[in-house]
Length: 540
Image (cartoon, rainbow, N blue to C red; front, side):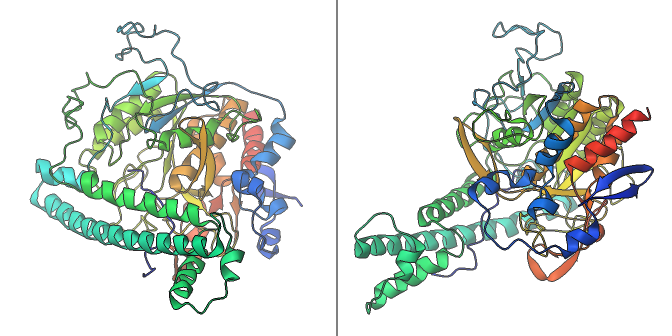
């Protein structure tokens, strides 16, 4: 599930050094310099906000991936080899101004003739495939387990406990957001009337002098809101989005008798029932924006004077619509991975995940299949602020069972970073784990494409994962002889290490260093990765 990240309103009431990395030498920012740098205290500029994930930690004191530095000092105008990257996600706006020039096109298929021209098993799959048909809203997996009585009594009991907990939280959150919205709108209206204008600033509000106790209360509400957002209209939108999210949870995700799959017409628990879906992976509604945002992070057309720059400069995006507004089905993910592999993708991004996976083995086999075909998979760690090494916090899919050895060496799991270096660098929502999370990358408030030629900031490990997929695509494009396991090794080993102790899960009482909460202990760094790739490729 693409868990939405909201700012938390729930507590409200009414210089370079040559060092060795394995056997490969590269230029790295010294750890000593990083951890003694003055922290950036000034607010990011608008330009920095829109591109902070591409910044350089040493130069900008922002924990980005040194993408701009990589282009300036290594890539230049070199395009390299085109790399097909599959976005296994919700539908993508295939007509977006910043994506229409970077789409994968199946040249062997004739559009719109209702035939499988290339005999790949999929009809009219011009830019990818849609495994969801016309469905969008869906249950979470544990609600489906209860509706269909899947698994044994223990599984159903665990599903029931999870459903009851999440349902109670959704009801409470919806009520609190509704109360907040009412209070903010009342305060907003009162202050507008007092100031005699529709648009006002925090300075305007703080400057109001009044003996009217009701107005004083309204001022207090707005001043509290300014601790969350710089703009009251933007905050109102955030709260309204929250109400919509919790409403959808109750109406679809957590509703046991809801069946979003019936319009598709297949049996989603039968892997052999494959004659479903269609060749149109376009998003169905404007709110279905997740896949479009992810695609833009990887490959939005660079330097075209429009909204955003993708990480990679020579990519063809294959759209695979398989993630609904709810939990994805194991069958769709397994078949989606196989579709991507069989149709030429060399990298697959998966910005989704769930806590129950009745047919996880189907996905494990698909991951192994991708490994056998030298395809790299990059996956989001999830947004529960939890330690995935704890068996009570599973997140599917993954590349191992019960913290055991990896089933394949082609999957990278990515946690998310905030733009502020130091103790608050790990995003409060980001999952972590020394076994289950490999690296960290920029994930909070990432500016990218959304449907209808628009752009928005979104947070989540869903945004960190495509950032890393973009780096992987850069490596694979510039050094096409490198294998998927080699690219994984490069990304993990070439990242920036740091001694900073970070807060875990947003709880100041819990903290640790990155090397204790991930496999690599590092921040992904495109510049270092390309240097290491160049050295490794020269040895082949």
